[in-house]
Length: 223
Image 1 (spheres, helix red, strand yellow):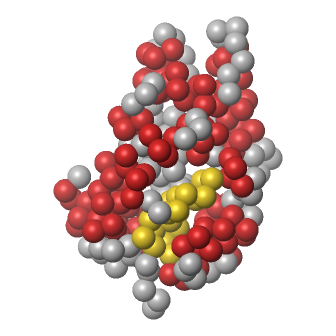
Image 2 (cartoon, one colour; image 1 turned 90 degrees about the vertical axis):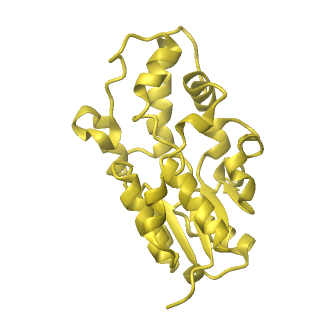
């Protein structure tokens, strides 16, 4: 088995808690009555037909969020971009919605000499230009490939190849983690080892990540 030398992570949902998980924070930040946001994505697909449409490839993930943000911004008589919504919903403290399991896994991987990369379809599109420079956890990531700028979205093979080229590693030397099955499928097609991250079970998912990196899953017991 090829030694896994790098951990390649998606950001939203994998490193940070999803916007579905933080509806209560969003409602409070925006001054909306509790329970105003009823769509729950993967946590309750029956409540969210639009999410089902996205999962079945009738719309893209960007289209899903553009529709949701348009719905919310209309409540205020405004038009928001995704980064406007995230800034208003989460303020200037993105660390508060980071997954502790993600932090521990990233620290453990770095301590074991594993290289770190982000491969995202919309990092700065969602979080605002220059987000990585404002976020201390990402300072240890030597590669950030963001389709906000490249224009090449996962699962296009070229997105993964850009990341591999920047790392100067082969596909089988990397573990790729994403919460969308289509992006996992794209990574597997070019030979990457993968973990399909379950946002409903983050500790279990990160235990799988550590195991694939050849590290003890028990490290997460420290979370």
